[in-house]
Picture 1: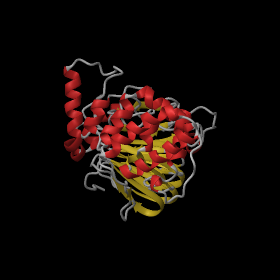
Picture 2: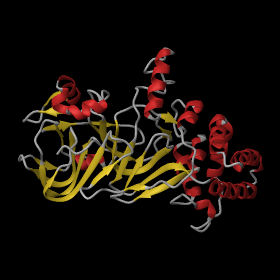
Picture 3: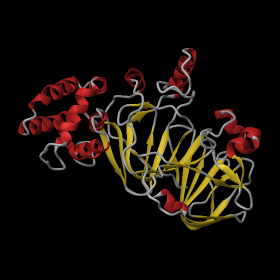
Picture 4: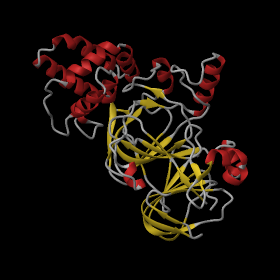
Length: 406
C-alpha cells in the first residue's frame, strides 16, 4: 500500500471550496474543480515515501510492474493500464453538455482520425484514444445534473410557455425560431431538434439570451412542462444562460432531464447519454479515457455530425444506482466499481485487482496498520494481501468491476 499525492485541476467551472476542505487546505478563492487519482498520463498520482515525499508516479509503477500492480485478470481484460480514474469533483457552474462513445465507436473513431492525420492535440479532434468512458457520480452534497432527454411532450409544453412569454414581452421577432424548434419536435424527433439548435448557433443563442431576460410565468410543479425536471425549466434557463450567454447549448440543456441527487445517491452514465453536471460536490469514477463529444455550454469544438452518431435520442427518466450489501456501486461496464464505507469493524475491502482508497471524512485503520484520515488516498496493488478496515467517516474504494478477488 502506497500513499499518494494527487493533482488538483483548476478548471474555471470549479468551486473554490469542497476539495480544499477535504484535503485540509485553506480555501483561497481559486477554483479547485477536480482532484485526480490514478495513472492517467495527463496527471498521474505520485507515490510517496515514508517521509511524504514523491518518489515516482503511479503510471511509472504500473508500466514497470504491470502484473504486480494490476493483476492478470485486469491485464487480460484491459491491458497493461489502470482502467479507471477516480476523482473528487466540485462544480460551481455547469460543465459542458457532452456524451461519450461506446467501445466500438471509440475504436473506429480513433482509427479513422489517425488515418486522416489529425493530430491528437488538434482542437477538432474527437477521439483521443480507443476507449469508451462510462462513468458514475456519487453525491457528497446536493448535486444537480442533466442526464438524457425529457419526453417531447414535456419539451413542447415548455415551448408553449416560452411562446406566451415572448408575446407578452413584445419579443415577437423571436417567435419564428421558437416555432421552428417546436416543429422539429412535432414528430418527436429529438435528434432533429438538437441539430437545429446547434447548427443555427446565432439564432438560438439569441433566443436563449432573450428568454433568460423576460418574465416567464411560474407554474405548478405538476405542470406538464416540468416533467423530467427537478426544478422549473425556466430556472435552469436563467442559471445556465448567466454563465453561458449566447450559447444555444442553454436550450439543449432544457431538453434534458434535470436531477437533484441528495448526499449518498449515485448516478451511472453509459455511452451515448447526453449529460452535464450543473453544480455540487461528488466522487466520480470513470473508465480512463479522454473521448468527449460536446453538445453545448462550451467554447470548445462541437462536431454535430459525430454527436449525432454517438448520442441516444431515446427519451426516458434516468435511474439511480443502488449499492449491494457490501456497499459496492457498479457502473454499466467492468472498467470500475466503487465501494462506499461509512462505519466498519474489520470490514473486508472489495477488490478486483488494483484498488484506490480515498478517505473524505473521519478515520479508518487498515488491518496492515495503515491509518487513513480525511484527504488521504492510497494505492493497493493487486499482489497485496486481502485487507480489512475499521473506523467511521467516509471511505471510498475504487477497483475494477471484474469478479471480486479479495
